[in-house]
Image 1 (cartoon, rainbow, N blue to C red):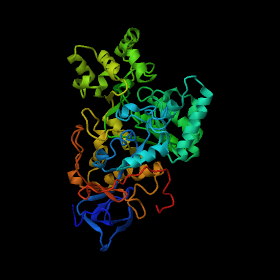
Image 2 (image 1 turned 30 degrees about the vertical axis):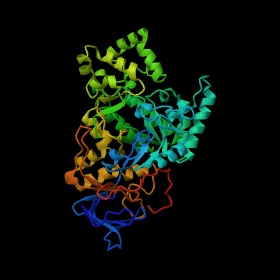
Image 3 (image 1 turned 45 degrees about the horizontal axis):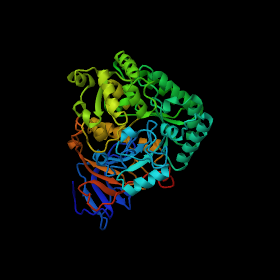
Image 4 (image 1 turned 45 degrees about the vertical axis):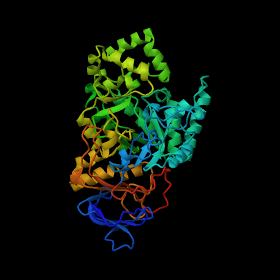
Length: 529
């Protein structure tokens, strides 16, 4: 790819690339003109005075990827450069998933009410979405962010130690309504995590009803992704039927070898619900390994009360004894043979990136004892990879008509033990589609227009006049996702524009302004679509 000029302050003309517009239509060779941050023309464009011309012959021009399921709201405040996102052509992230958001906080100036394990460097949360939006804008974020509000974070921030349940419900409703009024893309539930799983049915109906009234999306981390995954899907389909809320089932999966194949049943139920008129979609990432906080390896009764309560439990002789017995019997949420510690305090660096049983054998201990020892040191920040899914289930979900692509990632800069999905999800998806036009068009749709439509990010996700110029220029022949090594940067994404500004690639200049924005739901609805 060559350009005659490198300035990003003028109009840009992408010449002669194969345009995949994001709608699912077949690619076509065309020019794309960008003026004042928007796409101003697509087709055969004559000479544009003073435009920066980019030769895209032999390359593909795509809408920037929109990550349907991200936790980067916790990491972008300390890594606003977003390099790990831009390298894989991501220009927008939908955040606040799994019940976690960095707002509202529990007390002024305090840390996030929940989800702190996602970024140990983040020492404070924000009072509300407006406060978070201002902070992220001031930090100079280089990608767009579409925040949801996390129900678990709201519950944790609004709870009172006196157990005032009725008033707590009022505070939850007010906080969620406030976030939706401030333009949140939706509300997320984390029903497998502390705080979220404690909500009763009435509370979930209240939250879903508020979300539906705002025309926003309810994104749901299911209560069970193992033996109870079918029942967990039924619970959410019933909630959608009762309230009419647009529902996004997060990272639909079947974890644990005994449960492999269960996606046939869950997808069949989703198909039935969609046929009956329910607005239900799903997201997934193209990997068989998941990632989450290490405390999630404990039995549900033990993963409560926060990091300090867990530390006390695992160091108390009686509590430790009970946990060792239950973990050895397989009572944890994950199998210990599935666990790979991905982050922990310096003492535990030798075990990072290694299966827990192998690391335990080297230390002459048991996997359960090693798990509890790590949590005794680092219950707040330790994370794990979970090798528990089948390729067939992942592929089945990704191929479903209602599926879109979400990385479930949060790490911006590579670190030992990090999940490669943080850095290569969208390159891997494109690479799997290859150069087959229909497959490529569908893959691009699932990570652009489908996501923009789902979360009402109008003016995004398509290459069409009037839309924001979130664009990627890609060399399909050079695409490489780095495999399963998170330290190998993906290749093949030549150039990325965010809101018309060069943000990755050869046009990026040291003086390029940070072009990312914290988006509001439906803010662009009066523009052409």
